[in-house]
Length: 308
Ligand code: F6P
Image 1 (cartoon, rainbow, N blue to C red):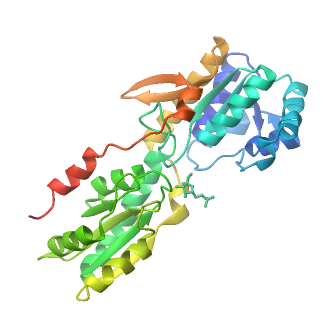
Image 2 (image 1 turned 45 degrees about the vertical axis):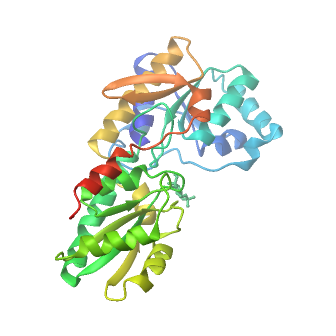
């Protein structure tokens, strides 16, 4: 997100527009916390994860009285266009606000989960996947040394994008995602088959899997695999930080620049996206309404690389 904030601020300054950053999302808007941004505020931030402006979940913004405070604040600062970075909740908030105060809004998809409709990739996803790959490579070393089966849990409360992409890229033997029903008997069978003559087995588990978290799944297969040494590891919030990958930096920089251009052109209520190498847009209402699903052919890809 820092790469995106940097791009928005620098594009505005380049084009003679005054960029105003709001701290902690809608909470800062309600509490009247923000500042006019200068080049010096965004120099040397492209390499850092997270956001210099901060982020917050804000229940008060759901209420009209809360939004009234936000509107008063934006008006007092003569804000005449709003760019938000986030997911469905962020986009919904911006849409309501945009309608209530007749303010042009643009949504930039930012979540590690990649589960936003209207884009192939969201800001943060590639970095998270690379963090998972790095962790799985390390777990593979110990799993192989000790002849173990590892259940590695990754984020993705509603979506299996991180698990699926990281599974292909790390050479995991199996992957369990919320979009597919997990069959414990099949998993037991696959683990037995996979483990024949091999030193380790890695199963990536998206935290939103229908059979539960990695430890729940380990406990479900354990009685059927008494001869195996099973372990689990939850990667957790390391997936949401760290220096962003080149792909994320480029995507964020392009989207930030594009968002400013759109506001200048008088366009509004759009969610930005990327398809192939092209930046695209979709109505923000559609991005909120529709659900993004991972490419399940990746599952078949993983299966087709398995031992028979
Ligand atoms: O951003 C979505 C997400 O990454 C989910 O995959 C995960 O369940 C959640 O965030 C964790 O959120 P929190 O930091 O509030 O525990």
